[in-house]
Image 1: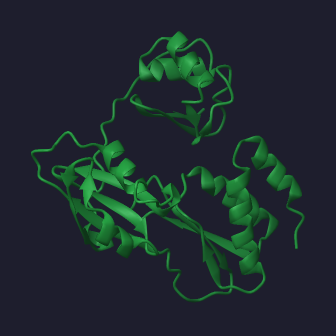
Image 2: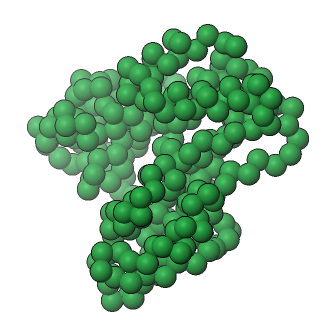
Length: 249
């Protein structure tokens, strides 16, 4: 077996040590003879961990899927390179419906009520909000439980029915293109321009751990958004949306 202690220490330093250990355990099960193993739902940052593990075990393949193209939360599979079958990612889509008069229900309401069932967040993928309902992606191991027990969001009665993956309506995202000139490629300079907020507010968000770069906590306001080649940086900030930065020299 490969020496993965350095890999674990690296991800521990970035706060992802526990997830790295879980993924490494699944990967090593495949190395020992299993055809494939699938991780719980994770952010795209999980692909960074998976790629690092694959580098230690080149005989493995890595697959990822979130139930539809463009999904933010995904499941990652480690697959034996000689496996010729189909990898079951174990994703079930469910349609959650409620009286459209309760249009103020939001993503946080849905997620909070789901977790109120006693199920860990890692068992849920994306939640796609719509008029009078939502579509949720869940681990197949908990799908039946959710259908039978998810009956209310706050005090609003809901019904849950299974769907097919090809019935999923893609998320509608509002995008605003921002063109600006900044004095440097520091995170606080670039992100404050992108979100149209003061650098003081931006720095406070970074220091509070609210800002992410490539789905990882920002290292600090002075973190460089590197240039050279092509770089895509995605940062998310509660209530401020999601921004992307790309550079081609």
